[in-house]
Length: 151
Image: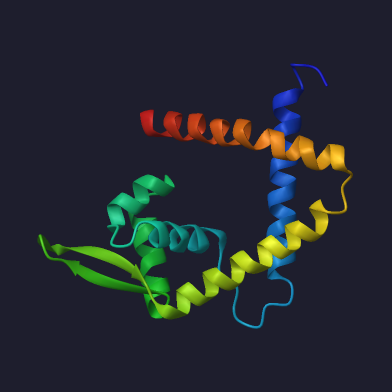
């Protein structure tokens, strides 16, 4: 693999794995599936309970009105609670419901089980290569995030 084709091959591999994970995790669901942006918002609220809509939009690199639409839908479906910010009664603070916590817990367990099944099928050298690549992939995510923050 040469330096010229490496970025494209890496992007294709990452997108391919993510797409297959989403498809496989949707299979067999007994509840209506959540869209990718909905899951991303719920995961963000999970790690940052009480986050505001505009902060969430910035963190997810989405337009504020797009996040507002997601919030309205997730509130309607019983996944989010929109509380009032005590410091600014006009601002909303987002919290997960028990229903959302259960959905995220189930999703994480299913994702771990799926990946575990397939990682164990790889030979030891490939498993070690994936393990060794994790710090570099995390660093890549940081640089992508930093660049997005600058724009």
